Length: 212
Image (cartoon, rainbow, N blue to C red; front, side, top):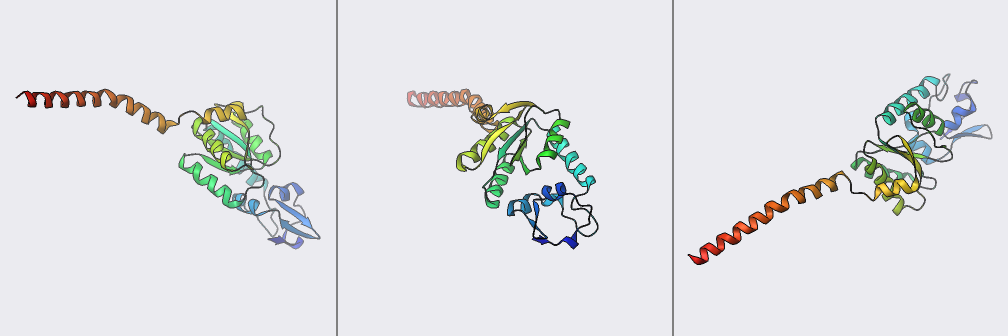
């Protein structure tokens, strides 16, 4: 994971290198961390006469995120610094089970996409991973549940129904019953009268049989 100077054109800007988690050390450009290699893979490192990330590629990422954020009702922003790739894969797995998306995104690109999706009011800085879903409770639960078992994973803030929400509000939503839990509760409520009726009929049947 090292790229020598001859591998990139002279017009590659430092921001492009930082975007990919690269740094120049002693004339050699090193990939910053295992996490960057794993989670920034969709940005596609390019070599030869092309920049590592063309402006068109940045625009594509912003467009994809804008669409995703615009179609969602919840975006939770968390700090994942110190977690391993295995930890984050575990997060992705639990999120997928709840139809929730998880992605590490460069702050500047995420900020633009959120603004395009009519979400603003939160300063995005430092190390962030974004969790989003069309279910406010699911997104909140994914973040809160993972934070409980991973002290390095910290909920910062987010957007619930397009409005800014702090950590306390997100954790409060995480405590609410989810869609499946609510359906189970409703089913139990609906079934109770039927069950009681069945028990009553069975008791009446036994009584009649005894009298006969």
